Length: 206
Image (cartoon, rainbow, N blue to C red; front, side, top):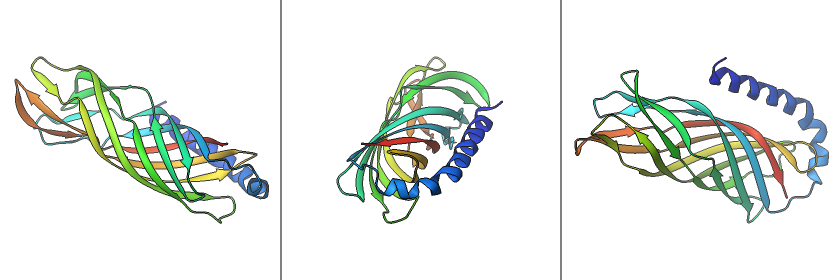
């Protein structure tokens, strides 16, 4: 079973759970404790755009990664979110052939607006900045990449209250991640990962 199909099945299962639980729990959710902190755990499918102008036809593999985020609410509507994972390993391909690998660590900080007043559904929009560090870069001799990337990040998602302080979360992010590629010290161009991140998970408000 491919990572894409595994993620799709997990998303469908959680969506079915939401359908059966969100409406009965909506009334209870209105009275649940709502402290300023929200922690979510997500399974995220990273779908790389693989845009390359180096002439090498570079790409990395898409994959499912774990994600944890920590949000703080200044008001019921305004929050910040820090998105974290641990360094993720990807194969690097040129023309479809694996030529090496790398790891990337992509923390993202977002400012969010949460729409309130909707029973059973709490949608939100976010925008912020991503800082990615590349490490364990293993490429052919003479080929190298910049080790850091800073770019914009956009987000849309929804929290569906379940029981108590627990919620089901669906989240989509588009993130700018790109690096300059060089060979023998000569800049060849820019490789743009620019992934679409589609996530599903659970949140705990306290």
